[in-house]
Length: 386
Ligand SMILES: Cc1ncc(COP(=O)(O)O)c(C=O)c1O
Image (cartoon, rainbow, N blue to C red; front, side, top):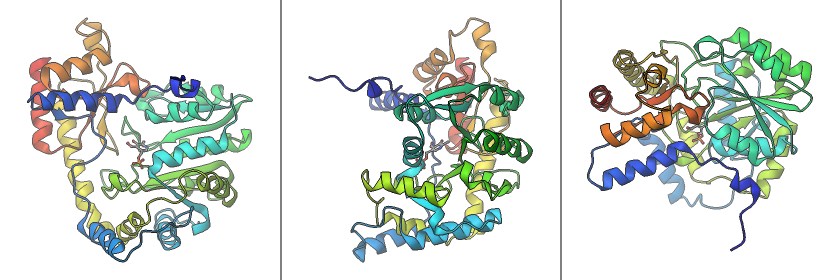
């Protein structure tokens, strides 16, 4: 058999998928496993979204579509985005992809030459480094400052002649931190000075707690489109993970690069799923608020419980707690967060993810998206185990 490419050999398999397989095996063996490793809420997709998708299917909206995505849907995305960010983007600034994961992959493919560097602040979403490497790029990791915030000095030091981009993710997976506007503005200045691209992954913009409003990096400098690409998604905001619809907001010329790539890659994204997304955008903020409210309650519950076991930061958004577990490692109870996560899964039957996967090995990632009962039971099981 021929050997796979060096690119493929270098991919670090997704830790969450690895744990998910172990969970499946334990469940097949009859164990009751609680999954705090998942990256999606247990909410059903709103029924009107399902109905509109079904209607599109019954009307035979099943053919090829535009590479850039359905125009009406892009108009609607532009309208929502401009409303939330007092912006003036047009449908020409938007390109759709099969989830934001796909969009990010294409952005790196369109941006990087072999050896180009991409700055990735820790903690980061697992896919960023792998996606950069698949495009021939080199990730340059930067440690966080206190409370998982961006360390501007560290980022400045990491900028060099090969720097092509910086990826940020706010609200952050795994930490739940939101980066404040004054720090982001300084990053924008740096990006313009050194002419690199800031890729702003805003997949969790729909889940921001304590009454705070979502804001995009774009809103801080609407003229910075030459140095920013914003990535958002329907997955989390509208409980549509399986629809696979994400999008990039970029300059017209960058959308053209992405369109040229997409034209030879997937063509368009699923035609009828886009009608579900169009329906999602007709839901009012009030209709989506109960989902955010429920997750905020789950965050509070998880934070209050797990703070008695670990040193926890209270997430401002997103789906996860990212507690520090170094005291358990210093006490010699576990050798790493990897071994701790494995033991918690095998002995307490609760699935959590090791911080190694997110670039901070002294942490665990616990998702608070399962039901409140599951969160309480998971806490009890982990407490008993520890
Ligand atoms: C930070 C971040 N970005 C992007 C994604 C991908 O979302 P999707 O491809 O479903 O849009 C995820 C999913 O977990 C994520 O956590």
